[in-house]
Length: 110
Image (cartoon, rainbow, N blue to C red; front, side, top):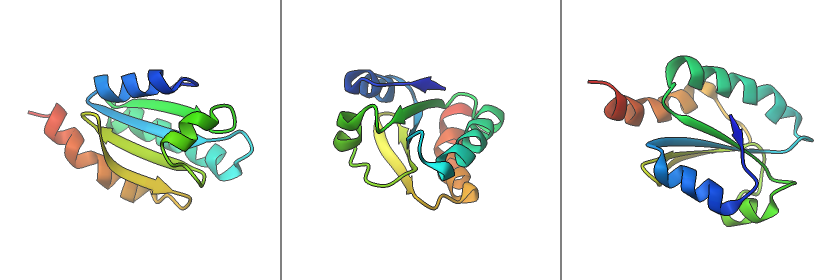
């Protein structure tokens, strides 16, 4: 998982990867600390081609503002540079998995 602090770097990753998952969080968010390893493991096991990026909104308030992140955690899924799905605050893992599965299968399975 890459940690990004620069708005342009984040935009570049989103534009240049087929699927990017952006995990917006902070070090003070306890829910985020519990959820992040589960998201990381799910992506590694089931969706290895998806790029996972971490943004600490306390250290990168410009990115948080640009992407309209007002609650934590917020998880955005981008497919070919376009926002496909967004999850905020109460994230159900099965809903996250369902949201990424269809575009992932279309892009990476024969």
